[in-house]
Image (cartoon, rainbow, N blue to C red; front, side):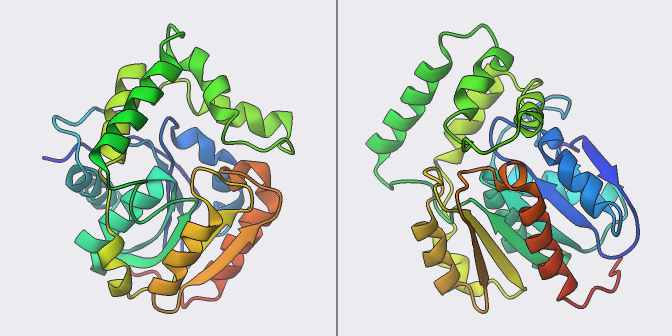
Length: 263
């Protein structure tokens, strides 16, 4: 049986909005969005299996993560939802769509990719090795997080929002982070982009080096009818760096869709 993750929830009514965080984070990274969207719709942010307090899966895999998301929706009696995924969460969103297309009302893919990095096995091995070196000086991930996040967050972020990012990393273990990193480099759904048949919005940060805008623009060209918005002056975490603008863009997209509660 797929591991059922923990989650934070806010609001009710309308087709639910599901929020999937990136690597090294937990549901708390979405607190500003839970507050905003919870005023008008059921909004749920999961903590990905393998990051506390969600249980670790027996075997970490893309299929298993998609199955865990399906199990969470089943537990909440949700048949269909809008799925918003950030970074690795955007990869989980794509995997979920390709395995459970009937359960997706729309996709919002935010600072993510359809395939991770290079297809060269040596590149992937070097990438994981370098990430291990990044955390070696630290006793735990809570200590490592501020330094790691500094590469993802622009200088315009407020101290409060930066603190949200740090809080969202406090329950991540170094072992869980590195195991998930090894899965991350295996993701590849590039060939299936053209089969996405639900309304899709892609969001990018102008200065994002983790999921550069040029890559997301290529995704837009391959997904039928996809929309694209780029946040000026933002790096990898627009939901915290430019919260009001991020929320408004997502709100406008969701409001443009027929939104009867398919539950």
